[in-house]
Length: 158
Image (cartoon, rainbow, N blue to C red; front, side):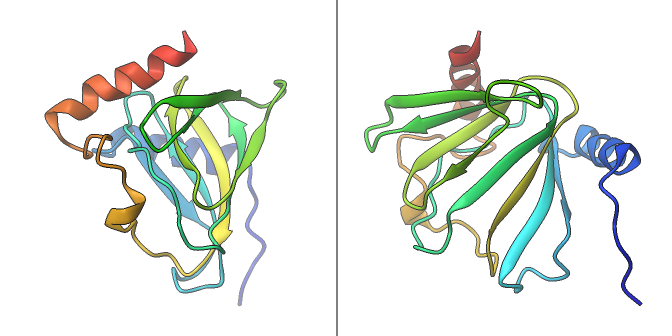
């Protein structure tokens, strides 16, 4: 039998602990039972030092909504050449707590404090990013250049 799942301090604490020990310093807690569901809803726990490669979602149904529940996230918007054309700090109780990222918009985010968790929703099914959604100017995750690029992105929020 299905049960209501509470989004409470215990769930957030557990998600943060799993992110802290993850090699990528982030971890999802999915509310959808399968990646094939028409709506993907999840908590995304992310720690400082996690590199999220700039990307976009080209499919017209893949707008992405983020609402920060704990911690602080810096979001960057890029033009096609890789120049930052917009930024925002999202935090609970702040001026901006979340945002909707339309499909086709190049973006990335950086965790600005430990224990950061945001709620994310976008249309399913889940599909890994395509090469066309990953700009050539953005270093690949795990590459030698990725750490320096992450620091450069983080520097937009100092």
